[in-house]
Each structure stands twice: as structure tokens, then as C-alpha cells.
Image 1: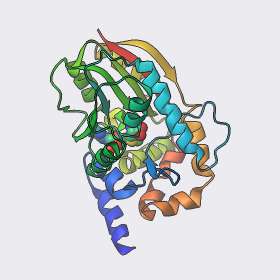
Image 2: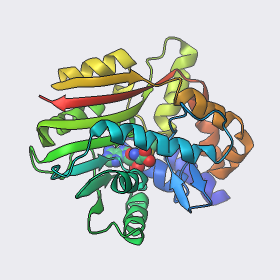
Image 3: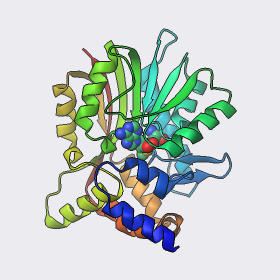
Image 4: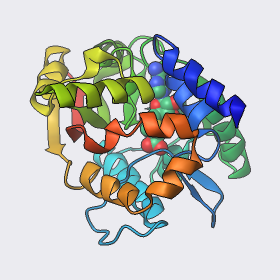
Length: 286
Ligand SMILES: C[S@@+](CC[C@H](N)C(=O)[O-])C[C@H]1O[C@@H](n2cnc3c(N)ncnc32)[C@H](O)[C@@H]1O
């Protein structure tokens, strides 16, 4: 108890990109939600469009729906030589892609050592280790050669990257000309009042979001275009992701407060009230 308090204090005092600490020290091996039927953790808010209730285990269905949405947009084919998943969590999306699409090999990149180790064990257990591996590394300095990637997927991770713009520059470097980025991402909107500023500060600190990544949906789209990506599809998914996910959280506040480090959970409350948005984009390197 005392140790977890100290851990949270140290975490909240830490500077710089602490995303690995958020996931390893605060969420650990159970993630945001743990599916007891399959023993699989998830770290994704889910896509709730066709899910009409927010019962506890519906989050896993919503996670799969998110994987389906983003992976179908990528139109994987057997001709893709290299597919990557950036900020791949526990590799549950990679497993979804391997089971549902024609993919010869997929590489995940993750900054969290705990998730990377868990993901590689999982891929091995599921018989996918010949085709899939997760590498420990950062989205802003990808261990891939220039113009080597056919398709890149990234789900709900870019808001952490220090910075999102640097990540998009890396996307432009590693994608082949004509290569595809299929991305979904949480947006922490620019605060418009002092109260909103406080809430955004709480999110920046507890969820490890660099201040440079705080802007609205329209600015996100402009940034992608400025970096040289051609937008093929774009949609705003606040009603399908952030609103129902918060509803899911509100139904179990006590369970969520006690599931994680208590001090960190209290400090994260800004997430429930700040102005959030959500984007899904399909883009091509020109
Ligand atoms: C909200 S989770 C989403 C995980 C996964 N894409 C999913 O949808 O299940 C964000 C992920 O981004 C990873 N991450 C954060 N910062 C990163 C960085 N700079 N480079 C690579 N991965 C990062 C985290 O470790 C975590 O796995």
C-alpha cells in the first residue's frame, strides 16, 4: 500500500515522456480491462457503434470492433511485404489482423517492456511467432529502414508520442511511396477555460501526453496533410468511442479507482471531464 503510494508520487513528479511508466507501473499486465474468459488484457477504449449497452465485458467486444474498423480500412494483401503496428499494446490487434486478414508478417513496436514481453509470449502461444514479433522501441525513432513499410496501423497510441508530429515525420520516412497509414487516435482538445486547462494538465500528467499534442480534430487533419500524407478517409468518432467509453467508466467508478494505484486513479479523473475527441484516418504517402 505504502509502496504503491510512493510509486504514484514518483510517477506524478516525473518529467518527460512517461508512457512506459503509465502502462508498466500503473496498468501492469491487466491493462484497462481484463477479459477473464480469454485471460487477455486490453488497453483500448473500443468502438461502440453497434454495441448498445455498457456492461463490464462489452469492452472486449468494443475492442475487437475497433481492431476490425482500423484493420479493414488498411486493406491488407498477400503482396504486402511489411506491415507494422505502432504502439501495439498487448499485440491483441496484431493477433486480430493475423486471424482475419492475409498478412505474411507483422512487426509491433511498443515502448512498454511489460507489454512487449507479454505480447511476444502471447503471439508464441497462439502459434503466430513465425509471422509476428513485437520490438521494444519508440514511434518517434522507428527501427525500420527508409521506404520499407507497405502498411502501418496505429490504434489509440499517437496521443502519447513525443511528439505526434515527429511520429508523422517518421511515418513519412518509413512508408514506401504509396504506403498506407490506418490510424485511430484519442484527441485531447485545446482547453477553452481555466477549468479545462486544469483537466488537460491532469491528463497530460497521468496519461503521459506531451503538451504539443493538445489540439483539436481539424488541426490534427491539417497536421497530417502538412507532413505530406494524403487523406483518403477521415471520421470523427467521439460519439462512438470517447462518449460510450466514459459511460462504461462511470458505471464502475469504485472498481476503477481501486483497480489501479489509488493516487494515480484520483489524479486521472481529468480524463472523465476534459474535452476529448477521437479520429480515425486512412492516409497514403504521396
Ligand atoms: C492506449 S494503448 C493502445 C494499445 C493498442 N494499440 C491497442 O489498441 O490495444 C497505447 C500504447 O502505445 C504505447 N506507446 C506509448 N508511447 C509510445 C511510443 N513513444 N512508442 C511506441 N509505443 C508507445 C503504449 O505502451 C501502449 O501500448
